[in-house]
Image (cartoon, rainbow, N blue to C red; front, side, top):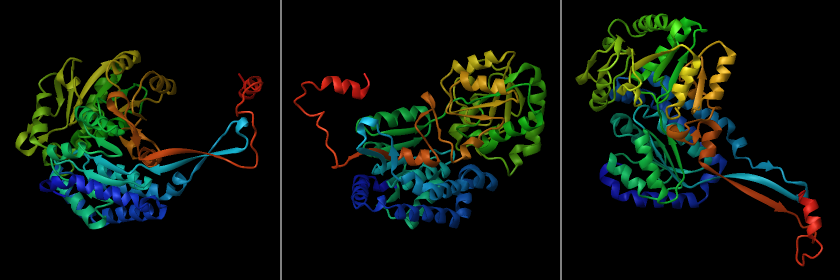
Length: 461
């Protein structure tokens, strides 16, 4: 569907509701078939997906496969576990309910809306869609218009491989999003920034529609002195500068033990050169900023602090070099908002309590990273901070583990997904209590005279 067909959105949702009411999506065989078809669509269009991402981001093929196309692993995981996820789960009943049995049934919600972001425009539409299909829902997908090549390809793929009454794509800009949000859905799944997340939640509230909001925030990276310095440097460089830093869980800023700060910065300089050469602008392995507007915003963040690596930019090419900034003040613009680009501020600390206090003074981040071999320090940071997720001695990769729920907390999001968490997000868990006819004790029926003492003994008060 293209922008000129926005008037048909209500009709489209109605057709999906009619299809859902047939009950076909509740069949596990149907869901497995559609998951396999989705994987087939990705495999058969792997080259086209990489080309679309190249057009939108100048994204290297390696990064396209590693961070976008490899979402097929999420599909494989769902296919493998769907029967066990969908099986009614037995629930314990108290002794006074000895003639009863209880189960929890996972049932699909209905018609859901999935709004994707521009930074990983393929993966972050498909990954939640896997959960929606596995749970038995019909889905309307709204990819980001800021990544137009990928958006167009998604529309073509879904039109070819999926019935529109089951899955369809609505392309377009703000107007398309507004028209979609004015409709009633059974769930809205949004990935993007906090400001737009508030708009989505406000629109959903008018229909009492539940939401999952995958947002972001300033994800801190603590670097203790007790580390393997070489491994730490490479892992930070990769996690920060993959996709030119346009990753919601990228390390946003470093909190570094003062004792190792000089060695860490020197190592990061060498690592950037090792990864991208003397001039990253010429590297085929380094992506571009999604738009000139976002590039302009990032360039303004370079005004404060001491640039120790990088700092070069070329607006017309949407290029900003991998950049490290020292001597950063907490009041500088670069520390006031999520960077979402290839700029890495470095802040030193002398005692870990300073780093923890700084983290806790800010909204809860989507991710937190700690590099340390000290198990006691690891436990302290885990206990004294709150974040959507934590990765110890690495960056970003926790997102790729399907058995780990992924999501934010507080300002960084509501709800989570991946693996069973995605299935649960798009399911209603219906409680069912079943009694038999073989016995019917009369203690609960009126008249109640003389029965209160027995009731109190029975329920233990």
